[in-house]
Amino acid sequence: MWAAIAISALAMTVIVAVRYLLSSGLFAYATSRVRPGLYDRLGPQIRSEIGWSLASAAIYGVPAGIVAWGWQARGWTLIYTDIAAYPPWYAPLSVLLCLLAHDCWFYWTHRLMHRPSWFRVAHAVHHASRPPTAWTAMSFHPIEALTGAVVIPALVFLIPIHVAMLGLVLAIMTVMGVTNHMGWEMFPRRLVHSRLGDWLITASHHERHHEEYQCNYGLYFRIWDRICGTDRGLSVKLDRRVAA
Image 1 (cartoon, rainbow, N blue to C red):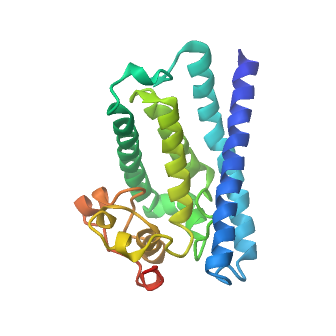
Image 2 (cartoon, helix red, strand yellow; image 1 turned 30 degrees about the vertical axis):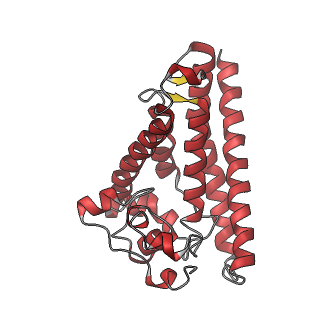
């Protein structure tokens, strides 16, 4: 049993690391084509980001591997494979519920990480990326990585979700984590400045967090920032670069 758990944890660690390298590498390449020169002179910072991120991959991979083993070998979790087990409308709802729950967890743990003692010990690693790049998304101190690593494994015990919808949640988490740190806005102005855009977090919104620190703490949605009065809008610098 222990060998199987260890193999599952190792496999998930490799998957998380490869997912990070491929997704961040793809958007870093896109940046070099769309915004040539943006990451010039950031080589040492990017190497540091990759190092911290690969360490984070192990921290994310272990609980994910344990839960994956438990799901397959012991029937743990509420992950299901029969799409007919729930009404058709439930599949997208389960994705939204997971994103809302993750967003809430992230907002409050992120604010905790900005308390002076936590910031000095852990979160300063992430904010050492000045400016953030496509490689920054998983550049965390192990303490901060642990707060992010437990949330999705915990949610699959609380929210029934089809395995394909869980894959979609992980894809959204990966893409938004990378694109929100790229240093330029990939989404068009008509979306960023739309009614929908007013509730979504994109690079233009998250960049302002990296500029000012004490605002814009959310991950996917601006709900908690709006409720708690920590939403300061978009980065002026990035907003000038938004596509028409």
